[in-house]
Image (cartoon, rainbow, N blue to C red; front, side):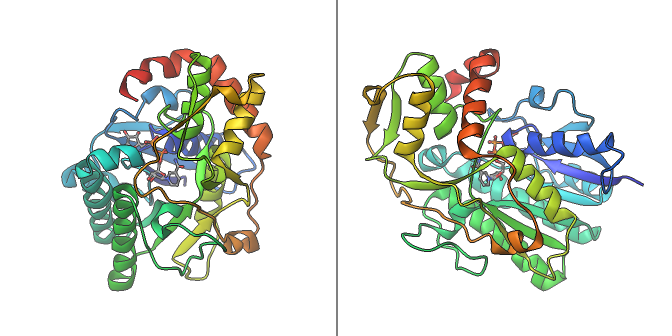
Length: 324
Ligand SMILES: NC(=O)c1ccc[n+]([C@@H]2O[C@H](COP(=O)([O-])OP(=O)(O)OC[C@H]3O[C@@H](n4cnc5c(N)ncnc54)[C@H](O)[C@@H]3O)[C@@H](O)[C@H]2O)c1
């Protein structure tokens, strides 16, 4: 019998990569399990049904904070993978209301339904819940010290998941990842915004002095890590970090993008820093590594492939620039 997956936010950047990965397994005779995928997505400015083209899934357009719809879908699934969220830090600084509704209340509704029908839940979370770290790496046991309204809404959701595990013995995992990049990422985010600005003949903008450090994982590797986490036993560990060791200063990424276009540093424009801008995120992902998962992409090659994708898919991103 195929495993019934309910993927929330499946029309977004990372959710659609995961749906693509899992639907490939429907036709792969060597896959460990086969999956029947249902997507629930509200189709906000960041959701795009075309991201799911070529995948085999059922689609439901709805909000994860809609109790009635959520109960019905969770009841008919085996595992809920919660990607749905408002995700852009700058938008959360302008107005955090939708972040609390979707990221906190939405997660709560999924948890209530998962508890009611005894289903498994995977919460897709982020390194940003840990705050900023100058030295060393965030461990799964570290305290949550979020600095933006976005990060605080994700940390709140993580705490709700933890409370359901502790109080109701819910079968759930919180998966916190470093920054994700790749094809189909909304052009408001740093890497696609840098690429699309250059294609449009504009300058590549960098907050502050560009020395902030992020660790990067490719979106297809993130999807493979989630598949791995679903199919492996973590001996009761409720939190799993995803990392790669690919740490880069923002200015280094800008230089790589410009090199790819044969352009010089004069195309960089330093702009006023984001308030509360975290200096560095870095993950300790030994737990996942010890279990045997590894990323399969090389950062520089994957960045070049991403640039190529944006060059070839202007029809996908150009209409989105008006919302960015
Ligand atoms: N992008 C990153 O670097 C990164 C890193 C770590 C974790 N995450 C987390 O991964 C998840 C996916 O991120 P992404 O970059 O793919 O985001 P995205 O903004 O590209 O997609 C989010 C999707 O969720 C949908 N959505 C939003 N609110 C909803 C609601 N209330 N009900 C139903 N659907 C809703 C949107 O329509 C969209 O399709 C998020 O939970 C995010 O916090 C992202």
